[in-house]
Length: 367
Ligand code: MG
Image 1 (tube, rainbow, N blue to C red):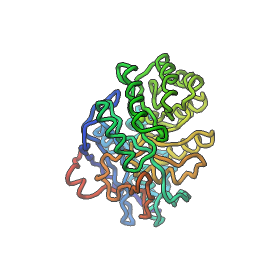
Image 2: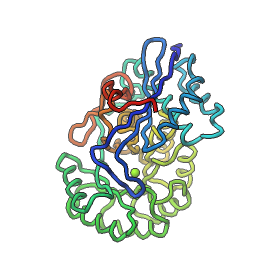
Image 3: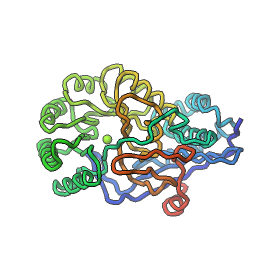
Image 4: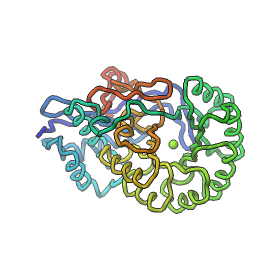
């Protein structure tokens, strides 16, 4: 028994190096709502999410509804606490979304504690054997960049060592999208892996047309082409498109993923540990997807801190790769360690979720 003594929350509002836009949002900050759980053995586990907005709702859900349900309980019983939070009264108003994500912040803190107690990094506790992971770079290719900026940005990534990059599409004019992809492909050459991310902005007719057109530019996957809940539309697109379809950053629980998988509506599963209910649910979804032969390449909502452990830990046969997006890395006590385009896995006990004290002083507040 390792008794949970306290649950504390706060928010970090971290400025981005430069403002970015995809087909839906333009933003200058990345917000990190944090939950710290202290146990009777003197350890502190850290859980968090990452959001453009709604960080106040997440910490309120923890403070007002969930913290009281875990204080005094045994931090070692992660599965039991997950189940009891899932079936707790706020279930009525949030089996996916705010309450579920807030539950995830607690679950992540409990896994961080478990790895600290075990004296090993989480990826080792999960049974992983990789010592490094490939990444693809998504920290560029934004829709608010001119074509010249876009090309400078993406060729800069390649000069820094990346061989896999992603760019945004989904602008108002699809011909403009195709022209940008064409110019980027011409600039980077045939050997670089290039993915495109629509951020949900196409309808099925446009998505089918674009999936045909994009074949000419050697696109390796089309990400979030349609509204994120449209299972039937994505299933038809998967059948139609020779390019794999990636999605999952806007699916919030295992039932949503199970629906997509059962319908054959997704090829690349981008489950994000900060959007579902933590590591417990992430592992279930990833094993389900991998068991059905899909690639699991998580969305970087956690800024890679947690996913490095999880991707290494599940031991999938399919490519062990994660999305590189370095926003807010200064927030963490031990930011991911990158050599060229590979993440070198940490050997510090825990889940790499601990917040740097200096970051809390600079960017932290109660809400
Ligand atoms: Mg995306």
